Amino acid sequence: MYLIINNSKQELVLGDLRLSLVPGQKQDIDMICSRYVAEQSKSLKTAISRNLVKIIRKDSINPPPLTVKETHTIIEKDSSKEIMEEMRSIKKELIERQQAMARKQLAAMREAKGGLDPETQARLNEAIQVLQGLTGGIVPGFVQEQHEEEFSMSDEKAVDIHKRTIDRITKGSKSNIKHSETTSKTTADNNVDELEDLLG
Amino acid sequence: MSRVVSLDLGTMFFHSAEKEGDELKFKTIRNCFVELHETDDIEETLKRNNWQYIEDDGKYYVIGDDAMKVANIFPGKVEVRRPMSDGVLNKNEDKKLVVLAEMIRSSIGEAPDDKSWCCICVSSESVDGSMDSVFHKNRIEAMVARLGWNVKVIEEGHAVVTAAKPVMYEEGGEVPYSGIGISLGGGRANCVLSYRGLQIIGMSVVNCGDYIDRKVSEQTGVPISQVISIKEKKLDFENLDFDDDVIFALDAYYEQMIRYVFGHFAKKFQKEKSNFESPMDIVVAGGTSMPNGFCKKLEKVIRGLDLPFNIKEVRHAENPRTTVVEGLYIQSQLAKKKADKAE
Image 1 (spheres, helix red, strand yellow):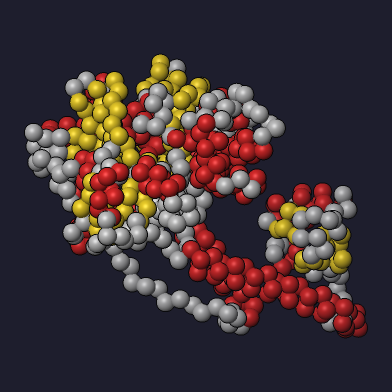
Image 2 (cartoon, rainbow over the protein chains, first blue to last red):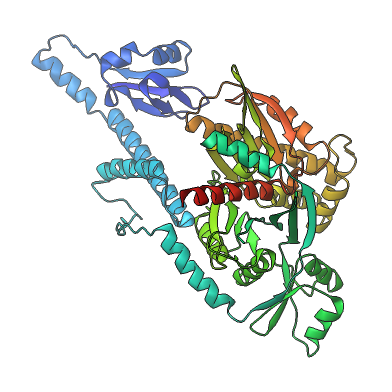
């Protein structure tokens, strides 16, 4: 275990570990990368030296050979109430964050009606998978949507359908409309020639 | 004989264009209407006042500037309605199709043959979550096509580039029809980057003319109609009266709008991984750009932004209100020539 806490008053981003910590948030770095990567992380070193991050617990990754008695002691320590409490709190926090994300995305989906763009959809799926992993496959308040069959229509056909609709809606209407008229010198012909040359 | 025309269905104004001799003839009408309450002498009233109207299913709708007159005669009793909102068909208006269809018919009429062309425009892809233009495009295209026209559809900002001809300054010389065309309308701001007459990037946002009017009205407590009137008659960016709350607020929200538009355009530019190092012109058109000194203000604001492209000159289109429909007319001519050649 390599447990750290964001000791600062601002959200902290450890870029080379792809990790962001809100103020007071704890994280076991061994859960997200190898110890070697953590030891090489410049952003972590800097954050520790500036006292932005505090190390709560750092286990040795190559512990000296232990006697049966010593092993017993460590196991007792790892399963101590304090550590278990920390782990529970991290788990709870993670679950809450993922659930909040899922709720937010669902609300946006309902509002947008037109659906999400592919990037957001991929992120949402990732979040749901993580959440399902944590909650044993059940995401509260989330009902997986059935994928509707893909449907596409050519522009020509769509316009034809719209034509029929407009004909029906405007049947029998009549008007007396006079538009105000102005004229102006134009370079339109020159522009047409130039664009023809450019576009080939 | 075949005809070539163009249509610009704006949120505030409806323009059409067609060549007449050496000149381009523009027809314009305000894109709004009011419904008249039924009375026995309704038709006589309309004729006596020479109001423009549409009759549909036994009901009468006064349209264009006459609608504004009627609204002023009966304040609070009739509601000014708009077929379009935020640059697309107004989803809350059930008479939009009837009104627009009659406006289109009365401006361009029916095509004389199957070789006549009409170019229309739609907003570019929305980047701020506003409604897209797919449904709008199909509806408008159908309204024109049902009158027998061949229809070409382009993005609004590209029409500005086509008419106003911005230039990119490369080592080998100036490249025409290359640069940024911006159309600032009532409903939306449209922004397109083109190179050698081809559109490269396009985007639109809704924070434009109507948004500014609404925000200024909210902040100052002055009714929107008065805000619009002050904007059109008094706003001068080269001589701002900061003692006037409305003028002060207009200046602030115009600046916010410029930052918003260019902030989104810069993001879009980077997202598309475009790489244009040569400085380019920016050409501005549209009714929202009409106040005196607007282009200077725009230039001052964007020169202070960290944009991923270089700007040579910011200029106003020659006829900002009709630039889009003129660009559409040019594109309509190109479409016809191409079709004729193909035959």
